[in-house]
Image (cartoon, rainbow over all chains, first blue to last red; front, side):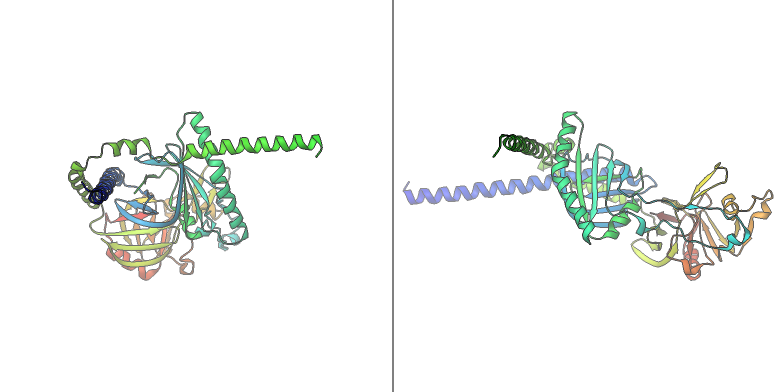
Length: 216
Length: 215
């Protein structure tokens, strides 16, 4: 075969191999997605059958949904996602506890001592504005999800810098320590757009609520 | 540089190097991996099965969709004190309401404690009452510093729950209010207070068995 023809043939073959590999990766990626969607539907159906609320965190779509009976009651948009360690299991996880630096405090009602006091009214409510916007969700399966919102003001920005440093230096070491103990470890960092989003998410997820964390 | 300073510097650099090595190892090992289960699921992936899997997913999604209420239902956002009356995807009414204050009341002597939260989850309308009478529970007397009456009739109070009430179990109601200026605030003992006009619309649209979703 002449040299020019041989070179052209090699070029065509390289393009064909590249195209085949790309196509196979696309097909395989699509198949993987189909499998994950199938698994999500199975897990969600099990949760939706119960008369309660549940949540789904869609990692790829960057969305958190609060649902019941398959209906979305509330949705939060996530602006950025980072993770370390093992991914969350593809099964229902329960929220063991929420941890935050300043947990909201319930007001104690003092019973009226006199007849005059009975008529007076003091508003001591636990409202959305009292909820924290930075907190950690501890889920079963040793999965922790850190929630924070876009900081505004000096102290929140400083706190955010502290979080980034801790996230990139301390969390990997924590993962190492868990590996040494042969315990599973998975950490996900979710950043929401507005402070109120974080506060309403804290409000909407009571301890014990079940949910799914899916790479979809 | 004095010998002492050199020792301190070497010790510092050694510790720094050790920290960097540990950090590099930690970061390398912490690079996100899919859960073992995901990896196993993906290994089983066979493109030939794709159509079958897609059909199964569609059937599962249909089953999930079938769980949603078929008639009018109510969604209450207790954080934002908002009630939405819906039928399928269609919103029929949006109303500003008042939900539980989240406060705590302790009985003097500490025998009983009440937490005034609006319950969360799925409920259904169990009763519908026109011109409801409030049967004051023990906490209402304790809060007012009064003695708990022995006779049931002494607990009755009319006019405070508005024109209509929809009971959804365990003493919780969606009802009217005398304090319409407080709508939008979390001030109740767990019930959901609605303004007169909106309450009438909710009362007329909802029937016994209508679903209520509170979050």
